[in-house]
Length: 191
Image (cartoon, rainbow, N blue to C red; front, top):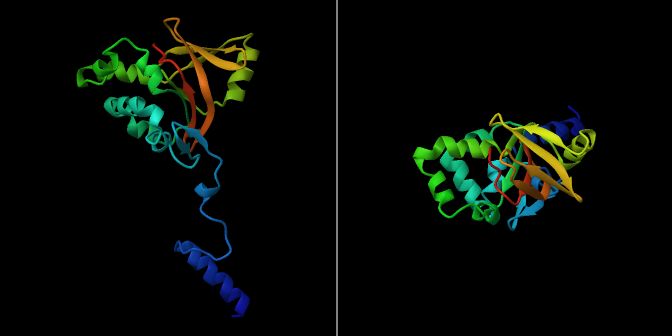
């Protein structure tokens, strides 16, 4: 065997075994384009749950997802579009609401509210804006809960209107995830 072929085969074998190759790029996550949410970088190579647990602004959402038993679902292949309420959004709810919702006896209600914030597929802000324009100023989104949200524009921001007429604004758009995309919202949406 010639020396060049032997070197090539050795490099392939080393790569297959996970050994670092001299002169090659660093791990993919080190080069990823991240968005900072809640003081933490959100890596496109991580799942929605893997990223959300690092955001200081989404501790209430993460606790709610755990209480509802949705960790495995939102860690799955997806893709999902998640309108993720920040802690400040949950703080707008009447006093005691969150504490009540995370109780085991309210799991069905909590699950319904959380899945109302999820749309199947990966829909970026540009896609939402395009759908809003095509719909004459509104786009109806079917949520995983089976209900609908209405997206519209408020200036340059995407605004969502829930089934009860409540409104929420996307404050950080297009936080790419391995299994979808997150859009941070400022108000909890109600089915």
